[in-house]
Every structure is written in C-alpha cells, then in structure tokens.
Length: 134
Image (cartoon, rainbow, N blue to C red; front, side, top):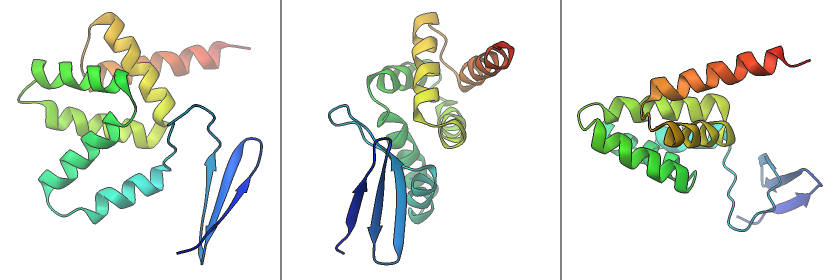
C-alpha cells in the first residue's frame, strides 16, 4: 500500500490509505519506533500461548543489548518463572515505553538483580524521585 511520510522536527506522521500513525522521530542509526498499540496488535494477531510468549520476548529483545543481557540472565536464573517475568516486563514496556524499560534493565544489570519486581521497584523509585524534583 503506498503511503506518505510527513517529517517534522520531533515526529514522523505516516499516512497510508485510511491508516495514520505518528511516531517520535529517531536520529540514531537503526533505531526503531513501535507504538504500544502496534505492539499489542501484533501480539493479539499471533495464535497460541507459546507464539504470544515468544513474540513478547522478541519485542523486549528489540530494545537492544541491555535487554538481551537482562533477559538472558533472567531466563538462566529463573528457568521456571521466566514466562511470567516476560509477561510482566512486556506490560511495563506497553505502559511506560521502551526508553524507561531499557533504563530499568540497565540498572538491574548494574545491581545484578534480575526480576520484573526489581524493574517495577526501579520505576517506582524513579517516579517518586521525579515527583520530588521542583
């Protein structure tokens, strides 16, 4: 389907037929931009629990090297719980976005703590800190 891209300083608007999406503009090479609604639609389109699980994990891995390192440790350290952990991390990705989750994973790597609960705790501390700033 042909489409038109409208480039602005801070965003890209994509119009193709009756479909339209606005993404933040990225300037780093190979840096992608996927809207939460598009990620959710992809997961919804996949059939089966296993397919959904692996797509969610892939969407987390798409966040880059910190996510790969974090998920590798998480899967090895929690071989029986990693499925639930991936689900929770994907919910964080959907609710808070890729940059926030990537920072939380980087913090988890530094502290060598690998769980969705740790990521949620980091987000809570970050939100409290941001609210305390004038």
